[in-house]
Amino acid sequence: MKIDFHYELEFRLISESGYADWVTRVIMLANAQLGNVNYIFCNDGYLLDINQRHLNHDTFTDIITFDYTESNTISGDIFISVDRIRENAKSFNVPFEMELKRVMIHGVLHLLGYTDKSAEEQSVMRKKENEMMKLFHVEQ
Image 1 (tube, rainbow, N blue to C red):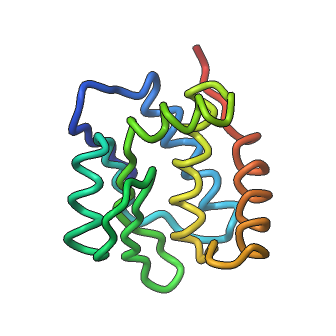
Image 2 (image 1 turned 135 degrees about the vertical axis):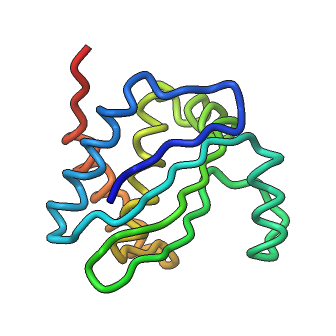
Image 3 (image 1 turned 30 degrees about the vertical axis):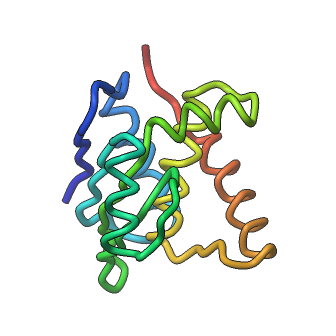
């Protein structure tokens, strides 16, 4: 089982192995097993098309997660708009890399069963995102 990274635009992670190790640790900390997790990095148009075709939403978003988790084996496709990450980083006045990590782990948290429909769930999700982001370490 593994974590794969796919790119539908001119963007690459600095250290795929570092990100994969981090996501794996987060899944293991939740007492779950890694199945197959695919990150697909794309632009706004690509993600808008998925949003319209599969979710009947006509809005831009930073992430869409398709959950294929079975029992305790975490699997899914996580689509991330790099355009939205850049815009959100500017809006929130945070570095691009920080916003990228937040959104990447947000998708994993969805696969682990966290939701963000209510204000209370959003608060729990944000707390968990911050907690998991502290576990990220990439050797340069």
